[in-house]
Length: 410
Ligand code: PLP
Image (tube, rainbow, N blue to C red):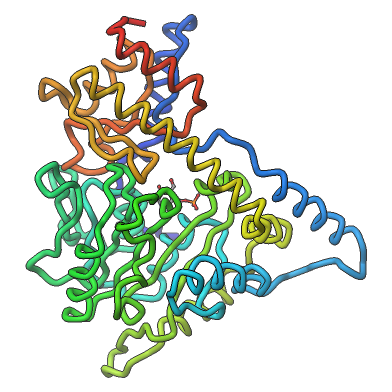
């Protein structure tokens, strides 16, 4: 058989595997080193008690023929879709209905799978730097074109994010069919303003583009003047799909649950120019290729909408935001230019002397025994930066930052 040649175009390793490889190499050479993992995008706090209880009850349901749940609805159980529509949208004055919400097994799958419903020759625009899944999925599905010498792809539109534009992608002067926006951003921690999103929605209405709005970190937004959903912008329901996740909000990275909003007003055009509902296409795709997220996990997610669940989410996020604040303050004190880390768990740091990202990665590891993520792994424009995360424990965060503030080597 012939393979999908697009896979061969991709560089060998996924960013985080390369970080792990270099880290393991260092640890093997320095077994005594107490390396603090500030590179991780994974959370450290356990699942809330109310979620655990809800899942225990759901497991009991499975043990009894009268309450057993087999295949569930591909779109997700209505108990969870209703709770999301009411709490995450309607209570905030956004008119999203439960039947516009599709429960997923996490944001990553849907970010990759959405490519099934738009044309294979679509031009995709992404922020640079950005979450690598957007570009890699576009390449796998043949939408990348050729790999250029600088590591970019010939058919992808890069929305350059830098200190000058506050790491917030601006609308380009070229057409893109699909625009993938992430706010708060992984990796820069930048949060797009309402005015930014207004410009993007206007662009999409004008260009007849689809915006995929990845708001996996929306729960970290505490500044009330910043938007948490793209549907806060009038007209966005005609141009945007929103993707969310319980992973970072509630410690679901190992449980796997999230959701994707495809509004009924959202349409694309077919070859004859006829308007077609994207919700119908997505539903068709899910019914064919997805058999729904697990019942037990969805019961766990439902518990997040109880008063105890909401409090636990708030507390978790406070904890990670405080860690990010500690990182921000410490690195600033140590003389680094620091971005993000407010309304986001990610802190984005520029090298002091124009070092490359991998040089900075090596320095952090060797001088302070701190592992970070090199910014260049998120795109060419990320070079010269590293990303640290607030997801470690308070103890480890303080320990790592003390090493940097003291200028202590190891
Ligand atoms: N989107 C962004 C921006 C992320 O950073 C991540 C995970 O790190 C995801 C999506 C994937 O999240 P999930 O665990 O829901 O698949």
